[in-house]
Image (cartoon, rainbow, N blue to C red):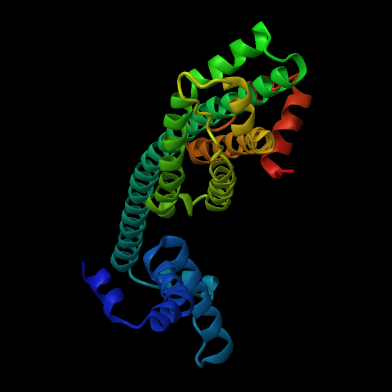
Length: 301
């Protein structure tokens, strides 16, 4: 609470200055005095400075050993015992802390990966349904224009009219998901930022999904019962260009979203699942599919 209250009271420019210029220094200090590797690095640095710029110089490792050797037996025993005790405690504490942090972070990553998978599974399913409806409108228009009021064209128009309510429901849900994806990114940013490229990949997925939801506002056919010429009215209400553009953007961006969301999930679960020889052999003979998957991850055309 104190941290949030402080951020609300301090000027924004000062907060930005602290975050980008002072915080890295504080993190470095915490690393140097709060971890074994940092303490070792700090000790070596202090020793180097004292050796080069101070007088008298500190003992070399050989001089230190000789000094300890000249101590009485009781003192040598005490020094060695104390050193072993301190090192053992530090190693045990450091190992226990690392294991606890790794386990907690792995559980958080598993939760985030599961939520991202659930979101994009639904988004992909609804996008496919919307795409199929858009293509059904194009098919109905093409049949009417090429065959006139034939059995196939009338059936296609009838089905398109029947499924219009389902498409509206699907579109409303996609609209809600287009907002939810940004909430996921913000809610799990602290975890995603611990994995190289995960935040950028999720932002790209959100951008791709946004392009889909931007193009999904097609004009839905609605014909009053008893209309004297429903087929002509159907043709007037359908913008075939918009339908084709929506279908195309779904085709391109769905593959991109699925590939990158799967990549994010893989990155998050990598410390838990890992990869071994069996994983590598499962890809044997699938070089073409692997190449296509990598192309879908890289960019959208």
